[in-house]
Image 1 (spheres, rainbow, N blue to C red):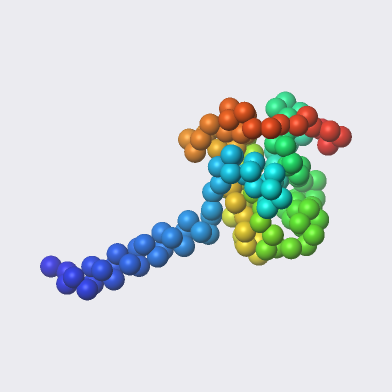
Image 2 (tube, rainbow, N blue to C red):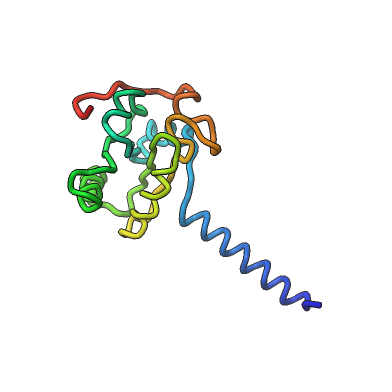
Length: 147
């Protein structure tokens, strides 16, 4: 049998790792992202492609940066830094169609020193994480000159 103190230590460590992992890759619902954008508390970045923006419109207040940037990952990073005035600690929420691409971009940005990157994991169209921006009836704008 494992002594009680060792079981407690193992449980404490497991909870600490789980808590750290949740903080390292935080998610945000579409509704929470919409409220944070409206309140000016976060910069919402839509990383989809121009045809996708044109097809569905974009979340109100979102900044558009195609993750398939012509200058690759460095170009994407530089475009994002422009949007947050060079502040790698600025709160950023990423949105795509279903949350798959944003998960990868979130990890990439964290590896580049961004500290407050949230993932709108349900995306625009919905996923297992939730119904999505569109089905929730959250505000959408037509895509302007970037489409």
